[in-house]
Image (cartoon, rainbow, N blue to C red):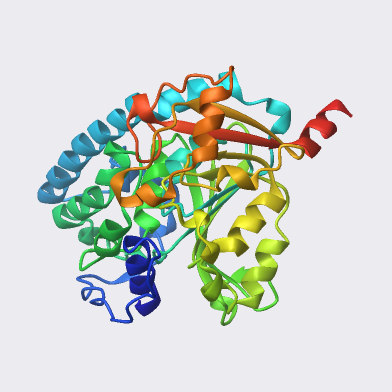
Length: 380
């Protein structure tokens, strides 16, 4: 908790000073028994229940049924808004933009929080998804009666930003995922995977060990805690999303040699970076920046991702979309003059058509960088 507070202060000060080592308030005491076990052992029905899609599997008392019905109504409206404004336009843009031969089996999304929706929209053909955020995995209520009006309200509150502005706010997550009736990102992950049209098959706590391997968390102590969620659309086989709670700052990750080894051993990936607080512009996140550049076949990012000057154009085919504007006031110091010039001088900057990152649709931008080794493999 102390390190997460440090990280938050680090972001808000725009990395201009040393972090203030003042502990933030701890999580509120939970109001229910909590674990990583679905009621009756069935994850598919639970994910749909949490997502407000279907409650027919469960026999609910009238007050709980009414609470769920209200949750279903509000959750459906929020998801419909996200689909209309973001997810459907992303799908249309992706189909017109991405070369299918550049697809990778792994989709990597650092600084993601529990945002499964966007990575599934940008990279629907991946078989594995790796998400990394500061927030803990958490748990779900062990007893069905604890899925009550208060629980559903807390869950919707935690999802409000991603469904309205299409990114999670770091300071909100530190509160929303540590409440007395909501703990960690697991419920949000289940919500978004189910709403994205997939059936959740099973959920397992995992950990990265000291030798860089992945084990069930119950098999022994590990270095970095996470969760593995297996899911399917019923047509194209089983996929797996792994979420790890990890501070990617150099000084933190270098204390975890097993986690460094795990990242170094990743296969080629397609990487998404959005709404990343411009952390990759600083010298303090060089490990993850170098990992992304060395492991990615394709990088899709807004201007809060890896700075433009890190892309050697002899190695990367870079295409620009949308409009470049200087960052919002909070991140104004991370303006990129070279990227602005590239947008101004490149004749084939393509339209974007949806908001991404911290800007609305008319000021949003994306950079799509495809490594030339991928192009060579396509030609071979």
